[in-house]
Amino acid sequence: MSNGGDSSDTLPLRVVIRHANDNDLQQIVRLSEKLGRDESTADSMVSPTPSEFQNPGWIMKNIRGENTVVFVAELDGKIIGYSLGWVSQPWSYKGKRGYICDCFVDEPYRRRGIGRKLVEAMLSWFKSRGVDCVEADVYSNNAPSLAMFKSLGFNEISKRLRLTIR
Image 1 (cartoon, rainbow, N blue to C red):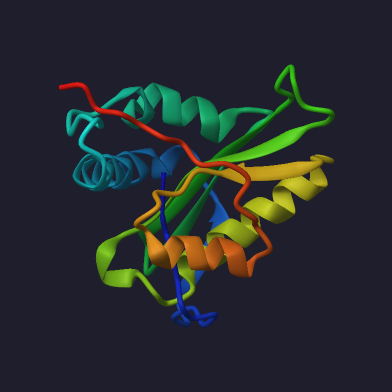
Image 2: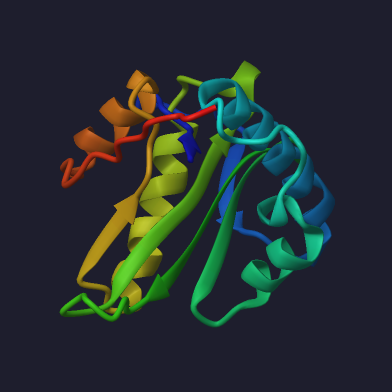
């Protein structure tokens, strides 16, 4: 789900990475809808119609949650990127898992280190919650995001295969 790949470690000077708050909701929803459209272009099985993941109530639950977090990248009062994740303990895991559900940077601001800084904020938050591993799903053809995650120490652990019937 990530579309925040970056090839640089430098943020534009005025970009601030911070925890999202209630006032950021509409701007995050707007970006999450763009992420959904990008995913529907990358994956023929993803509907371009907004899903539960773009629902303002669901996003607000993650902004306010105890085991969930949303970070935003803000430039001159405008939210230009966000990351969303949570801590869980899947029944088959030995310990707590951090999961990066979304990491998205608006098109004009990509490849400037913003996605990387959003993921670094997530990693710091997960570490403070005592997670044992962090996972993220990235489309196979999203080379910038794959490179960014690998540069942060992520390793590929599985591949999802699909046969489209119709």
